[in-house]
Image (cartoon, rainbow, N blue to C red):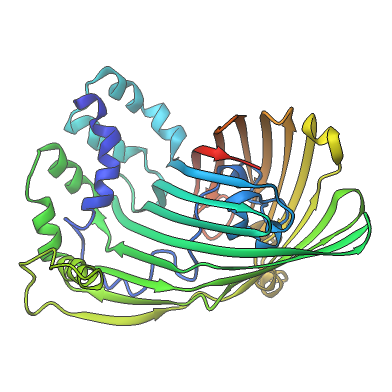
Amino acid sequence: MKRITILLLISFIGISAFNLAAESDFPEPFYSGTSFSPTSARVEAMGGAGVSSSTGLDSLYENPANLAGQPFSLYLPSLTLTAYNVKNIVDSGLIEEVLAGTVDETVALSFLDTITASRGELLTTDLSVGFAGGGFGFGVNLQEKLHTVGTGAGLNLVAELNASAALGIGFSLPLVDNLLSIDAGVTARPTYTAYSDSIGASGILTTVMSGSEDITSDLLANYELAAGYALPIDVGVNVNGPVGLRLSGVLRNLNGDYTITRYSEAGAWLNELAALAGTDAVYIDTDEAATSSTFTAAVPWSVDLGLGWAPVRGGLASILNPRIAVGLDDVLGLAETYESDPNALWKHLSAGAEVKLLSLLDVRAGMNKGYLSAGVGADLLIFHVDASYYWREYGLNIGDRPIDALSVRVSLGLDG
């Protein structure tokens, strides 16, 4: 049983994350000014350059104009696991301890020493179902995410849960046969999010390893959380030129602000959800003095640009299909900081390439905001696997606090 304890432990923390919460006002989501987006192992491997090159369900969040003219894709379901600080974990010997079945409290606590960035990520799990094809797309996404604050024995966690349904439509307008066409699309993405205050990670590890049975009751009765909703809308456009060239633009997060309620007791939040579902209260011990307050978390709209090139067309594409993509995130923000920040362009630039061989194997590489990425994909009838290894920057400047990540996506269905 101990062999799998550490593997289950991190996911369990996501459920019991509020148990040892530190006091904080947490007036806005952990990463303020951002909207929910599921993890895409394919896009990450290509350096995050998905505006002009995204396919399938990725188009619902990257660029709805890409839904136009896409082959049919179906995911029933798609599961993505992302682990951060991968190199540190491997170097620490923690994996060997797990495989040897020698995990105890000391080994579990040593895991905290692998966290070196004072603000970052620990683990993300994405589950999605949906389809895309014929100019339409629909997907349902669930995501669990653990953020980190601090390092080592002083490490705190912030747990976040997201649920989103995305509905998109795209259409193509031919202008000059085989030379020029325009794609346009729009996606509505109703999203619900819930997140905790920061948590003492070492305390949770000790509590879980000791087998305490009081975690759930303590969570519901004594600790706060915040939860809310938003209805962001994205509008995308592609200008398709000769020899597979594409210029893309996305107006992102229109109407993206979250309406968030802060609950003084987690149990009060559960009871409110039960009332909305028309069922009896889930938690009966809620203090009559439990309070809630509502505020707005602003998510500004932005403009992203992309340039893509897919030179191979027709029957040859089933044998060898290369694709190159370049993207600029938040070009208005880039324009504001370009003169004052010498690294401004790198902070907004993404680029990647993909080569599909015999419609079976995909090889990918890229660069995202100054950091390299790589990945592979395999398409075996209805079974699809994508893996990517990449870095993200969690500091103000490139090189401040980079964290490496490994994402693996397993999907059942059809991948166009």
